[in-house]
Structure formats: structure tokens, C-alpha cells
Length: 485
Image (cartoon, rainbow, N blue to C red; front, side, top):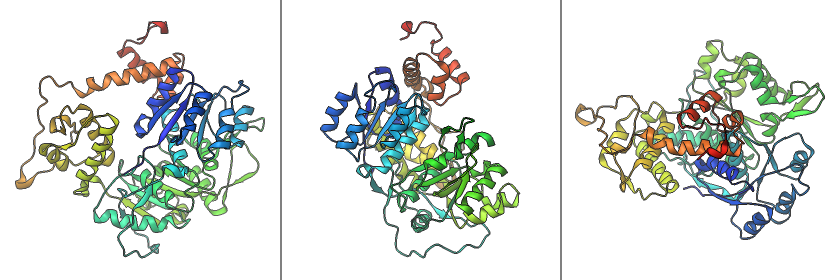
């Protein structure tokens, strides 16, 4: 069971308050607001706040007063400061005082990641829970096992809001290996289909290591060209010698750097990673001096790295460095009773989030869940249960509330195949039911960002064409913001 954190957002603009809260809603934490520093101090004095997020005006002479107050009175409470410009003197001063500085507007994914990292570093929101992860990888190469573990795995610490359950033997085996690996500094490779929980396993290893009090930084390598990914990882120094912004390696200093979908790494990036692993340093583009890199590397891929080596897509010498510990996450279709365990876990979480008294599943819903092949794995199951709870109007989620993909269900007992239930007349289609909250989020973002479509698209983590189509769909393509609903 995870512990809910209380997050205080400090901002005088209601639209910005609402936008930030909507961006963090999926994390499952309690969100409170304060219109100014004075109100924030009054709330902090009552106790129970685990994280503060405050937008900062660099020209305000009192811009860092709240940060200074926190460091004096609540030193263990982390604070995220949102700056329009990360290179201004105030931003640098805030960093020196121990604040975490983000550029605002910031993409929702980056904000959520920063919030999770800040909460992870705070002892007040640590919790203990079993994890849904699995079995060792057989990759055709002989590696020494890290440790022999004969006892059942102990519960392991995971970030708030990320615990997932599972009881299959494959999970127990990988937990044993993951816990043994956590106590070392060796790199780890995690292999598994999309949606199986590779990021969660990486976070769990980090949180049970000696680096748990340092940052966990995640980089998704797929979809980025070599130049972009190089800047993302190693940062960049501008022509005038001033740093643009630190790369993810620098942000992970002393902690763990998690590289997801490493099958997409170009030969050039692979060469730089090998240099960093061998020499403990890297070169920032535009800089003439190497930078020390004290980071633990965890890599993840949906494809076997040994197969990629054989295909010439992954360097063998790099694989020899990172492939000492390999863990394989099994697909959900191979995890038997874990489907129902996970479904109950997600039901409880989303029932609390939507403030609904949903106490379980009907027998036809359980039967449908257990027969589905789950091509999207745990991520797909989570999405299905979220929709099911959102649409549920009764104490229990029924088969009609669930919306599964087109993957044909497995035969049940006796070889019969379950058929999809008909949606009853009067039930709103899922697409229609979900349009209204989507429309409201877009309106809030547009209002908070002065109807700047480019910035709104960036913050909502969608492209401008998608935003334009949605604005057109919802009748938002008008010139005067005063006319908006």
C-alpha cells in the first residue's frame, strides 16, 4: 500500500494553479494551493506538506523568500521552483540554496518526473510494498550470478504511487536478483515488452541501493535523433562559454541514470556511453574539459541486447560492460493470477482518485480480464481499469464497463470463447465520456499560457497539429480569450 503525499502549489494565478494540479493528478497525491508566500507559510506551519511547488518571478526582490524560509524551518521539505529562464542569476541562486529549478512552462511528463524524484528523496513519503517484476534473462552469454538467495524476497521500497503487486514464481526470482543487484554498483539490463514495468523495476533497484538519497533520472532514448539525445544526456555549452542547461548525466550525479529503449541508441551515443563507463567521465558538447560522471547505469530494452549485438546494432564491448546483470520482465499473459491482483490494485487506486465507492468486479468482468491476452501488458490493464472505474455506476465494475482491445480472448474452460458484451442503450460511449475533461484541461492550459498554442502544446506534451485539431473539435478557435467558456 502506498502513502499519499501532500503537495502545496504556490501561485497567485488560478489558471496556473489549476493547470499544474491537472498535470499532477495522475500521480494520485493530494494537491493544495496557496495564493502567495504568506499563505504558504501559514499552511506549512500546520504541518503535513511533503513538497512545495512555486512559480517564481525573477524580478521580484522577494522571489526566494519562501525557499529561504523552508531551508530555515522545514529543511527536509523539498521545493520545486518554476522559472521562466534557467540562466538568470535568481535561478542560479535558488540552486545554490538547495531548491530544484525547472523552466516554466514545462512539459507535463518532465514536471511529473521532477515531482516523483523530489518525493523519492524525501524520507517522509517513503513506503514499503511488493513489486510486480520478474525473471532472469537467458541471453546466451555466461555471466556469474550476483548472489544466491534462498529465502522469499522481502518487501522492497518503491516510490509513492508506483507499487504494483504480483505473486508468481517468475516475480519472486527477479525480485531476488534485483535486490542482490541493488546492493552493488554494477550496471543492470532490463528486458521486457512494452508496458511490463521496466521503469518501475529500475526505480526499485535505485530505491534499495546505497544511492537511494540521490536522484533517479530517466531518459527515453526512442524518438530522439543523435544530436538531440546527445544534448539531453550530456548537456551543451553555448558559444559564449555559458552553460545552456545540465544534461541528464549531470542531474543524476551520485544517483542512477535509467536509459529506456537503448535499442534506439546511435553508434556515436553508444561510443560515448562506453567512454563514460570505462573512464568515469564524459564530454559535454562545446566544452574542452571532460566532466566526471558518478552515476549508476540501468538500461532497458524491449529487444534482447544479445540479439542486437549479433545483428550489429549494439556494440559488443558496451554490452560486455552493461550485461553482467540481466533481468527479464515476463508479459502479463504469462503471469496467471497476477491479472486479478493487479486489477484490484488499480481499482482501489482509481476509486479513491475518482471518489467512487467501487468495491470490486462482477464475475463476468473478472472472466473477461483473465481471458484477455494483454498485448499492452500492465500498462494496458491499468488503462482498462481506469476507464472501467470511471464508467462504473454500480458498486462493482461489470464487463460492460470494460473496454478491451481487439486481441481475441483466450478460450475458457471447455474450449469456449467468451464474446464481448453489448453496450447497453443509454451508456455514453467512452470516447464521448472522456471528451469533457480533456476539453477542460486544454482550456485551463490555454488560459494559463495566454493562449499561446506552441507553449500549450509543449506543456500538454502533444504536437501543435494535435492541439489545433482538438481546439477545432471543441470550438476553441476564436480570437478573443474573453469569449471562452
